[in-house]
Image 1 (cartoon, rainbow, N blue to C red):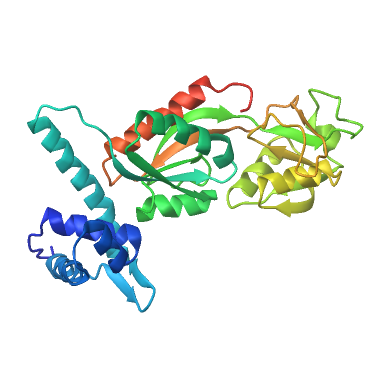
Image 2: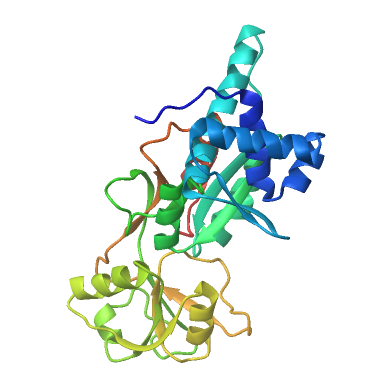
Length: 307
């Protein structure tokens, strides 16, 4: 085991400020200390923990090393616990404040990100939520690296070493141009579409999920176009290039080009996914992330019709 000298809470606060801003000058101004004082504190902290925490980039600032990211993940929680302890000593009720980094799966993000944040900020106005939007694979990496404390995503491609909590099942539906001859057949058999061109939402793990959903009912889709954007897929469909299979449902029946699209249920039981909260098992959840998770669950408990 490495020998680690004791370090102070002040050093950790300085370290967190530099990590958040990515710039010693900016962090020093925020902390109201001199740049030399801050630089010396960070250098001493690196000696105390026996690891380089930042990569210094001339004229650009600093970037966390892998060790720095691990320390940041732990120090945020430690500083929050210290603050909680202070409130207990004074017999006060804990007021949540500070920063919280949350990951959102790209296709889910526009459906829940802004509205959940609005609800959360009403309850906890002193918490600043930073959103990281990405595909399933990117979110798994972000949780493991500590870049985000909590990710809201689907339960596909989540490695077994991560903690997950399923919130709500999401059943895929067919999206088709409103002027397509089959647009009025609701529900529709997926077999009626097997010879039609298919538009695939092409994201890591997402593509495999949709192809597996087709194979489960014995169909190999005729992929005509691939797109990584949810609205791009809808636009291809709206212009009559093919149909698609999607999960999240919008209450709008038009695309960016004002082309009309129609949502159809399937007669076959298609493979569902689940909106899921994902965390790292090696880190105790902060009070802020627990509160945010509760807001997400509350949102989906009241949400009907669009999933």
